[in-house]
Length: 231
Figure 1: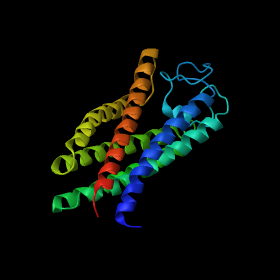
Figure 2: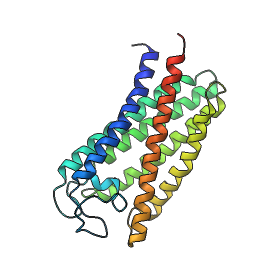
Figure 3: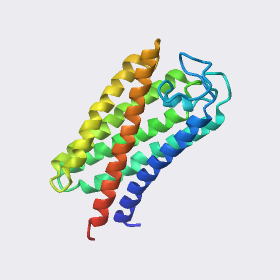
Figure 4: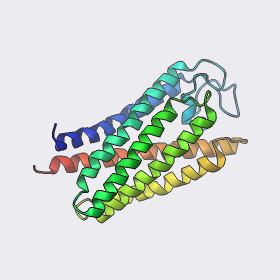
């Protein structure tokens, strides 16, 4: 397999990983067996008052078995997490003309690998069994994920031949991602009022879905650019 084919596959993998996560996590919400942090008796998943990590519980907050939801969430999240590393390797192919680009692509791939590794680790440590560990792993991969966004945005801005619109969208998402990271670190998804719960759960949903849309846009854009290159 030549480099061009590898790059195209890495971008397609990211796109497919995003699509399957949206589908399977939505199905996982349907199978969630109930309960929120402030209402253990809730009968189903509440989009505005449950967190994504609730889907990965072996037992829901209501105390019922949650294995179907847990399985779907772990599988879909792990696939999505793994896709980050080949994507960073593939997109770094566009940035290797100067010494600075070569150094930045190494940094990008490094943070991409760390993000994937700790994200997978967070997926396989359910919140109800490994609460503090799950949260710590989440903070780590969120932090390194922020660095992936920042480094890639810098690389695109420095590359005249790569459309700046992709860097601009990364900067916008970087601000949102950083805001969500601060929320996670300060509040630790531990609300004590319904207002706080809705705020934290909503911010997380916005951050995740904008993340998916942003990387779908990046992956699709990189795929188009790669296909347009005449070998």
